[in-house]
Image (cartoon, rainbow, N blue to C red; front, side, top):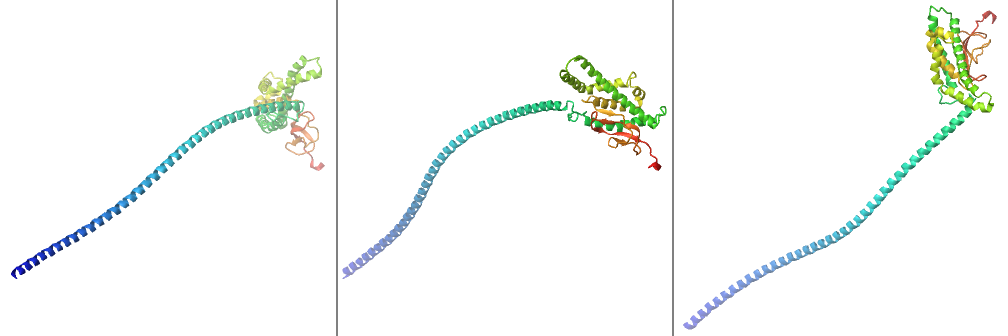
Length: 345
């Protein structure tokens, strides 16, 4: 029994050892399962990370492929753009050349137009001069508007001569105590100075033309006319240069104009302007006429009154200037009417 008890005790002890070992094994198995689960969990996490990395890799590869595709497309676009740029550059250079050529052609055309316009203008000017000359020949109603000494202008100058230089000369002579002239005598002096100068100018021009007339004496009128016209034109053309010489001749002490020589110190400006206007008037074709005969009755169409009114002319103060003999008046004259007795009105 003791042996049995001892064996049972030993068996119980062995059983307990086995149970203990079993428990240890179970614990170890449990620990192993936990490690296994942890390992599996880590494996799954790693797999998830791998999957995520794979996805990122795939996305990256896709982006790379897209970039490569875009790059290829960009390269193609770049090549196409370069081709177009080259084409546009060539076209631009061509257009620039065409533009330059067009500008040169336009410049040449404008130059040609200017030359043609100038030729046309010159031709029209020559034609106008020719026609104007033909129209003006012996036709005083038609004048050269470029001539500062044409008849209309001379009419204005003749009126201004009376208003200005005549008035100054009248004052200077009247104020001279040594001369002691009356108003009427002073008027007569100035009027006769003008008359002397006008007649001298007519004679001087006739003398210049008479030499030309002698040269063609014996020829027919048709042959003489163009020659004399040229001579008259020459005298008229040189008038501005000749007038100062004639003026000095008239004012000189040996002058045939006795009144001019006598009163030149009181009326020099008046005398010089008389010479200028009278010569230009006399050189017109036909000559302008200064009329020193007022008639007996006052004509308000031809004259202005001096200091009083009336119907009968007492004396002439300033003559009338006509465009030509029998022509229109360019400048009215001035007369002094006689005093009228009111009782006889």
